[in-house]
Length: 174
Image (cartoon, rainbow, N blue to C red; front, side, top):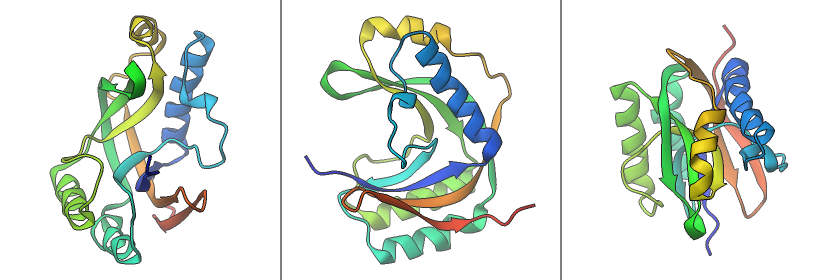
């Protein structure tokens, strides 16, 4: 199986804490969560594009198209259940990004070409390995986030072959 390279958006400290609170709530309920992944690269993020390879040209294009719109504040609009591997389900908070930002991301994704999925469904994953019977308890474990927002401040590159991440761009501190 090909390990997917990615370009990702990272939230600021408050957004990081919001997502980590979901991970903790699932763990406290005895359910799988991304808190179980102890790799240094594991951090709350939204994947902008995932592909078998991402070139330096793709990185420059990401900085040109996406970085100028950071920091970006987006509404966290609810929960989504996504089909996972081997009959498992992923549970994620859906993120409502403004249209101009979505358009920039879609342009980048089109340029990368050999990406994993068409379109773009921005989300912050809470768990990737839920069995179908765990969905109800997982939904019950997560708090309602009425009118929550997350501010994305960093554009990051994940290279699974090197096992490392690096920031492509960070929004200036306000």
